[in-house]
Image (cartoon, rainbow, N blue to C red; front, side, top):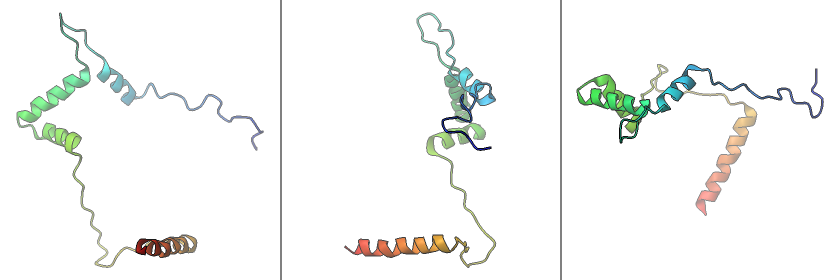
Length: 113
């Protein structure tokens, strides 16, 4: 059944995902505790971060890995294939291959200038 001009298939859009577990956890993490006298309350996220740092400093490897992954980024994992020493061949199709060949032939000409 074709759509009529000007008719939107989903006028209200995608429903909000406010009831997912991750959205609820995010809300809880950003919730600020009631402050003590003269002090500003801290968020649960700050409490979690402090606990992870405390565990990492005490020698907990799991916590240390979390800190390093968040601060330094995860270490890239090497990939291996069992196909021997020959490169992996991918068939892109005639149209894509000819377009790539055209692009690379122009690239060499502009690099020389």
